[in-house]
Amino acid sequence: MSVVKSCPGLYCGRTDLGNGVWSECGACPRGFRTNDTSYCTPCTEEPYLYDWQYLGFMVLLPLVLHWFFIDMVAIGKSKSGVIAQHICAFTEIVTGTLAALLILPPTGSIALFVCTPKALSDWYTLLHNPQPDYKETLHCTQEAVYPLYTVVLLIYAFSLLMTILLRPWILTWYTLNPGKKAIYCALYFYPILVLIHTVAAGLIYCSFPYIVIIISMMTSASHFSIKLDQSAPALLKSSISNTRNLVILIGHWLVHAYGILSLTGFKELWYLSLVPAPALFYILTAQFTDPMKLHND
Image (cartoon, rainbow, N blue to C red; front, side):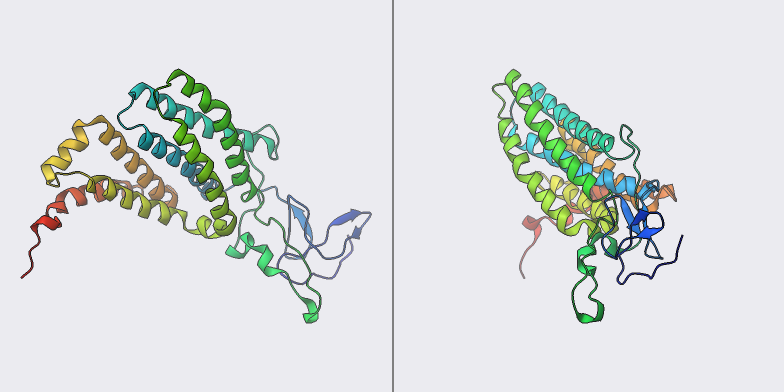
């Protein structure tokens, strides 16, 4: 193989045209990424655990939103109808995720061939198009983190399609349940998630464990804050005796544990003992922050 001149910029590369001939510097084809010598090489690496955890977080977002809106619009309605919608939402997300994984290389397998991100700039190649000699800009925009960027968009597209196809059938069995409002909510939050991912995918990839931990603590506190009786015994009793509250509390703990595992990479598992800490801290200190007990001097 003949030696060719390296390309300018971080992501411009040359494609092998065969017979030892290489293309001019430009964007690598989809599924390829430039290496240190400016050759476009195929993405054949296996995802790291962190990569799978990132995808898990992006899948968890629409699932939690589905469950939240289903629960919010169905307060006081048939429990069986609500449970059926929760199961349907889970099925939609799982089916959409599997469909996206199956169509990506290696096709027919849930495994992935990736180009592992090496820097935050890998997610934003559009911002790193070089301008040799300050003349014409050389456009080398590409998916340097293939397919971690597009797979999320595929998952959301397939999941939304499954929501439109499956959820109405569930609602036909529970006509008194206003579940159609939850479908309308999905038609709003999916585009919002796509927009957020399009703009902030790299930032989310680098910080999602912290996002999970912070959000789980905030939502846990907001769950307890809506209770009328803020005394520690009342909060503890309602969390254990009420099935709905117990399920929500366990859900918060599972999400918090996911954030800790993503942050530590299954190392130092003793950190999992801190999972109940935010809930216990709120229960034990809520009585000291009750506005009704504050008096002006």
